[in-house]
Image 1 (tube, helix red, strand yellow):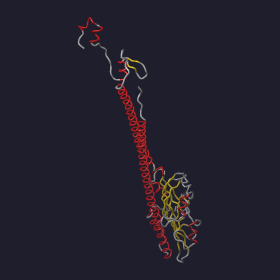
Image 2 (cartoon, helix red, strand yellow):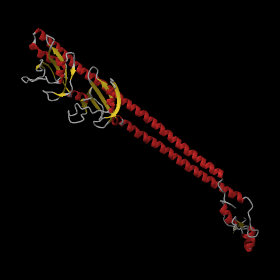
Image 3 (cartoon, helix red, strand yellow):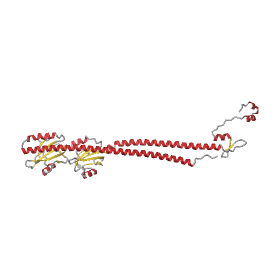
Image 4 (cartoon, one colour):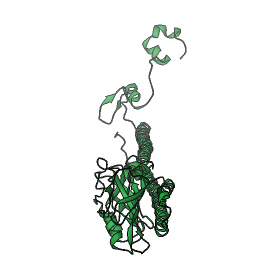
Length: 401
C-alpha cells in the first residue's frame, strides 16, 4: 500500500494562487506609492506657488514704498527749487528760506536733510546742517553732473558716506538756475540707507529669506540680512548669473531661482524695476524655509504609506500561511482518505491466526494494523464461545456477551 502523493495539478494551482496573491499585493503597494508621490508633488507645487506669491507681493509692496519715498523727496526738492529761484529773482524772503526748507523736510520723514548750495557747491541753506560748520559738495559727482549738463533733471547718486553723518546715504539733487538762467547751485536731499535696512528687516521673508535693493549697475545699496559687517557690502556687484540675465534683458518684472553668491542659499526671487527710479528690488524666499512644511508632509506621507504597506504585507503573509496550512490539511485529508480506501479493499489475512500483511510484507496483529491505519482503538474481552472453550468450568457463570 503506497502513501498518497500531491498531484502536479494541485501543486500548480497552489503556486499559481500564491503568485497572483503576491502580484496583487505588489500592485496595491505600487498604487499606494504612486498616489502618495502624486499627492506630495501637488503639495510641493502648492508650496512653491505660495512662496512665489509671497515674494511677488512683498516686492510689489517694496516697489510702492521705495517709489513713494523717492517721489516725496523729489516733490520736496521741486518745492525748494521753486522757492529758491523765486527768492533769487525777487531778492526778497532770504531769511525765511531755512524755515521753508525745514517745513518741506518735515513732510518727508525719511529724509536726513534738505540743502541748497551756491554755484561753487558751498551749502547755503539746510534743514540739517550743524550751525557754524562749513560744508561743501562741489567735488561730488552729482554736483558736477548737474553743473555741467543743464538738461539733466533729477540726479540720484550712488551710495556714499555723508560728510556730516558719516553714514551711508543716497543723494537726490536738482539744478538751480539764477535770474540769468545760469547755473546757481543745486538743491539736494539726503536719504540714509539705514531706513531701507529697517524697512526690509520688518518684512516676513522667513529665517533665511533676503531683501535687497540694487542700482542699475547691479551695485548693492541695501540688503537684509547684511551679508557682512554693516556697510561693507554696499556697492558690491556680486550677483547670480540668473540676475545678470534678468538685468540684461531689460525686464521690469521677473522671477528666477538661484543660489545667492553671498551665502550660498537657494532662493526663489521676485525682481522689480522701481518705477521711475534707477533701482532693482529683489525679494528672495529660501527653499529651506518654505519647504519646511512640505518636508513634514513628506514624513507624514511616508509614515502613512509605510503603515499601509506594512498592513498589506502582513495580510499577504497571513493569507499565504493560512493557504499553505489549508493545502497541507487537504493533502493530509487526501492521504487519510486514501488509507481508508485501501482498508476498504482486499487485505491479506492469515486464515489461521488472523494476522494482516502490510504493504512492506510484514504480518501484524489485526488490532495493531487497524490501530495504525484508522482512528479505532481496541479494548480486550472474551466472547461466550471462546469462554466455553477456554474456561469450561466457569462457562455457566459468565454474563451474557
